[in-house]
Amino acid sequence: MSRSSQPARRVLDRRTLLAAAGAAAVATGAGVALGGGGEPADAAAPTAAPPSPPASPSPSPTAPAVPSPAGTTLESTAAPRGAAGYRRLGEGRGWERVVRQDLAAAGGAREDRRTVLASFVHLTDTHVTDVQHPLRFEYMRSGKPGAWRPHEALSVHGLVSMVERINSLRGGPATGAPLGFAITTGDNTDNNCRAETEWFLTAMSGGRITPNTGDPLRYEGVQNSGLPLYWHPEGGADDTDRGRYGFPRLDGFLDAAIRRLTSPGLAIPWYSTVGNHDDLHGGHFAGSAYFTDLATGERKLYELPEAEAAALHRSVRRGRDTRGTALRELLRAHARRTRTVTPDPSRAPLTAREYAAAHLDPAYTGPGPVGHGYTRAAMEEGRLYYSFRVADGVLGISLDTTNPDGDYRGHIGPAQLRWLDRELTRHGDDRVLVFSHHYSDSVTVGGAELTALLGRHANVTAWINGHSHRNRIVPHGHFWEITTASHVDHPQLARVIELTDNGDGTLSLFTTCVESAAPYAAEPGDLSPAGLASLYRELAFNAPGRSTALTGKAGDRNTELLLRRP
Image (cartoon, rainbow, N blue to C red; front, side, top):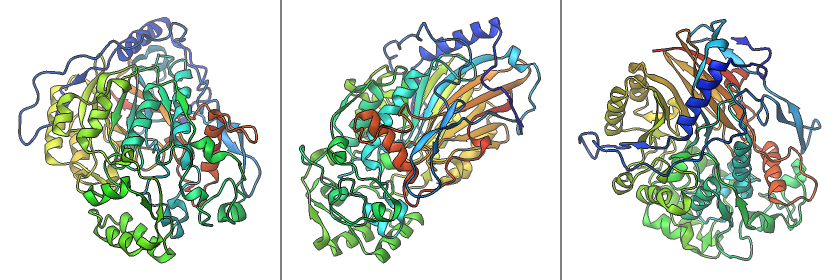
């Protein structure tokens, strides 16, 4: 690998600027789902595309067609202050861009010749969370400290701040081309419930959000339970997070966390990909009437003995009890430990049809496209995979890698693989970007077949995904696999991706990580939405049991990825 010494100072020639503007305009005006279709069994591919959505907003006339690192991790990153204990954050050095030549050599004149084919933003694993939901598994923390996050009550604030950051970007940091669209690759929600889905859709499309269920006037959850297992921001318990890790006391925190806030919504079209937490209880357990009754009911388990919590965590990690039989027995055995909460029908889980239908609700269209990739046909069939036009010569394909029978690991069946093969063949002259929630090694059913299928089609340029909450970029023969960190765990990133033709027989994929718009360190006691978004980042950095490997290596973050043009 070689390093670019001045990633922010590249200047494109006039021909490239015009091409960049043209390509970006096509991308921004895109948003047409192409026969997003699957097959009930061995049916033929759909012959007609659904109606085109309303026209998307035009790029801002002030957007410069020159590279800009502003608002990205090329410019600065959140960095800790102090050496031990609970650490505040401040502005740290940016991450330089790394040129990776694993799949093709970098030509010396490519910067003067390149034209922009696509420019967009990748978001993943936002985990918008109803922290008062009765089916949450916070009690597993007694067996594994990282099983509960002290900052989860602020997930909506963190996503809104990320939306604000994306809106503030004045163009692709490598090319300056206006951003054409954004796409989320799953685990948009945490508990597969209606309320979380509505909060997520509102944050992305714009509007007011009250991140509260149950009692409309007060918080009912683990953070005012009096149990030492959890951080109590307003006191009331001698909890471990404050006593051992130095977490702060923040009077008014819980009321502020469930107070209404407003999202501006993305200013560009956006697409949605489903993840295991969007489809399964806790991201692992298949649905049942029993779990639906628990989710909407009045009893919630707050604590579990350490040995049983650890055993439950091991069972999930090993992919066991996906139907929840053992979990049901555990909850019944500990029924006397449960506490009363206010029941709420908005906590009900969504089926695949209902999840697609929520995206089609006109209240959440925002800048479009209608359905954000899902169509009426998809809703009727319960099918959550589709293709869409990114720009002239560039196709996007969004897969559904969740397992309907349960299991947090990935799954793709023969019918979807056949559909994917047909789409890649039908669009053989396009460069194809494939999106899924699960990354290659986590697709335990059909994963080898999926990777082999993508390898057989030379038009596949990138496979873009999440699930691991970790930045990682891996070469596969002729395409790159780009896995982006989550919004919920530190370092809380999204990623701008720009695809260019270098005019010398190669393509480049530029990847640039971005943090939310929240200040690195809010003023003490600032419980405004921006202040809470800042706390969301700070608490995530300090969360006990967090992995320190999720940021990835330098070559997994800000990069130029070379590959041969097919």
